[in-house]
Amino acid sequence: MLAVERSAGVKATYNVVGKLLEEVGPEISADGHCLAFHSFDHRIDRLEQLTDCRRLDYRLKGYRPPRSVITDELTDEHLLFHNFEWIASSERSLGIASPVLQRRIVRIPVTFDDFDLYAGGTPFDEWEAEALRRIDSRDVAVFALHDCYAFLWLDRYKAFLERVLALGETRTLNELAAELTLDSGT
Image (cartoon, rainbow, N blue to C red; front, side, top):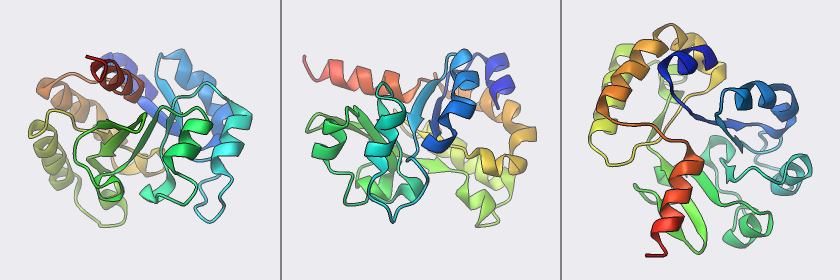
């Protein structure tokens, strides 16, 4: 993934499970990508995720919950107390289709991901066509790819990114959140 993004000049956001941050974070950061947490241990039944993430790193600005499940821990107050500036989750779980700053937290809806490739058995060509349609139909479209499903798309990732870039620019979620925050002051 990193090599393809490097060759395309794309800076992405990597939502990393906290337990893996020390192992993979330096290589991801070296390419100028944005790092955010994808929980501490990918469990939704344990409500110590934010605290455990912050024990690892207090600087990361974003959080993406596993399986887009908004647990009782993920209140605005808890996110702010733990110094998070944004949360990204599915449109369904956030109840919005466009990013918004609300109560000092930027909420970033994820338009689509690669789960249907994995669990739904959607053929890549159909998945890609729908992904590109969604990207083209919105001012802001956020998509998420899982490294654990990369065997389903990695060989086509370069061509997919080229098609995405033909539709518009890419930004990290930190950049998107900062833009929304700054725009709210005008």
